[in-house]
Image 1 (tube, rainbow, N blue to C red):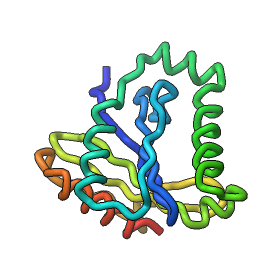
Image 2: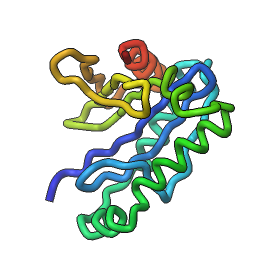
Image 3: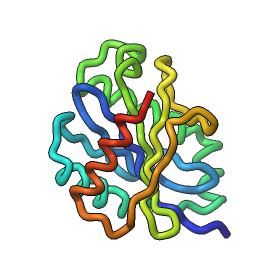
Length: 162
């Protein structure tokens, strides 16, 4: 059995920040049991860090059987689409192109007693990806970092998103 790695996906636009708690199985996906956490786009690093620390505590491991059941039912895809629709509706984005045109995404995980901040590139069409050769590149901070340090690191991650 693989070691559980808690994760939270953070999406930022000019209008909002959304923390999506992750369920971690064969792949990580937005946890259908947890509501996304919405924050103002302009936020103090200390408040952002506190919210991230609270959210990552809610990440959960799912068994191979539970993951397969969710995958087969289509609920992983439908929940991801529902979260996207909620963000777009709540913050008045007319379409996916407008939303993804300004959206940035970082994945925060706890690995080997460190926070790993992984900024992603936006493909501007409806998704985010990592490019291990060209970046943006992940970085780590100590697990005992305070709220401000976590928040500052997440904001740094967003500045690296392309």
